[in-house]
Length: 178
Image (cartoon, rainbow, N blue to C red; front, side):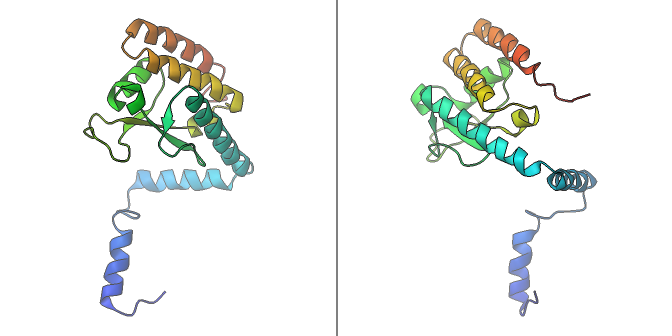
């Protein structure tokens, strides 16, 4: 593509640098190489399809437990839970789930009323679970653990018990095959 004016060149550059392309950071280059290598492997399409299947089951299971999802469901690997109807902050939910051995990120929701340091939502996804070999039926177990933790977010004893259950469940799906 040949840009005809200096303004077009500036516009294009402002869209690419620094957001899409930054300096030659070796760790970023290596990460991209690994990601592209994974995408070239046989089975990658099936893996991605399983990620989405898992996300849909997790999203539906959470909704059946009374959680509201910002998008009403998911068509990809992510979902965001709007916790306003549960009267729990994203920060409290993130902390409780962390104590229960479940990693999520607090996240602002559309029309957020809380500070970005507190938030009203949490974001979670299924790629890491799928990479460990989990399938749809396992997402129901994950949703049950999330529900139990958030229903007991102030009870550290219960959260520790859930963490033990989560750890036992996770051992069925080792991080590495070796």
